[in-house]
Length: 178
Length: 178
Image 1 (tube, each protein chain N blue to C red):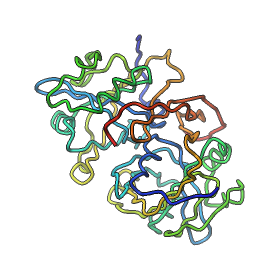
Image 2: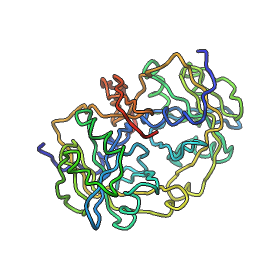
Image 3: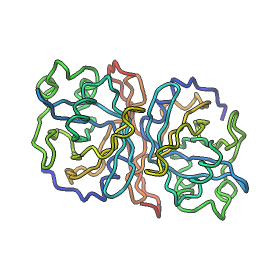
Image 4: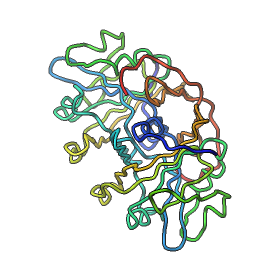
């Protein structure tokens, strides 16, 4: 994919619809990938993203110690890999190699971008005050990439038990809000 | 709609896909409705939901002072009303009357349910510690209702500037995760 830098003020449009995302982290042994649905925008610009990462996940400590991650947004084209990444732990497994995903160096963080995702958001950990109570991390997006050819991405939206809604048609109504 | 009580452990399946929701609050003058996309699940059971409500919104103070609200989930069938609710303030307007939505008494909170929504989640404000810093409220869902006839709801998912993705097809993959 030929990706371009995306203005940070437009990041909310990628995460606000609630897609399943793949969170990548770097670590002393290898980078990891975690499938995640519990995230929300918290501020437009600079973009803040809140997300819950269970402390039973391998990515929890990698994010906390490195203070960096990438939020990668997949489409249904790689649904099998997305689910596979969510069904195993990176503690004893290289998920990139195992599931045939391609790590690419990020511009500003040590965690890798996933090439097969149409958008990649490089993040730094901005606020860890709610980690102990809720495993809730506040991330700041410091660099965003997207494939401008992907206009109506067929994102995946989990509604439990392995069932996913796939993004359908687009409608436009006269919203006055951002 | 003939709604039934939904087990609290199944609430996450309604919010995890990231739909646009309508948050209702009660107040000294009249109940209000706010259109909201910035929310995330934070715990399965009891279900915790985190959401951002700007302090410029009329609902901000209503939620903070009453400590209660309802998260109502609409489908595209009432898209015009959903957008209209997001484009005006309840400070000087009765949105139920203006937009033809039907308030129904909730079971456990003072805020009304919106009858036209296929699911309604009665919430109490569980944690306001992050309100000052991020306008971030942690809600606990204490009673949930849904129309069991709605199996693949055509929910709305905002991606900015009045553009919405509408929930499309459903796929099932062998997820081992909840």
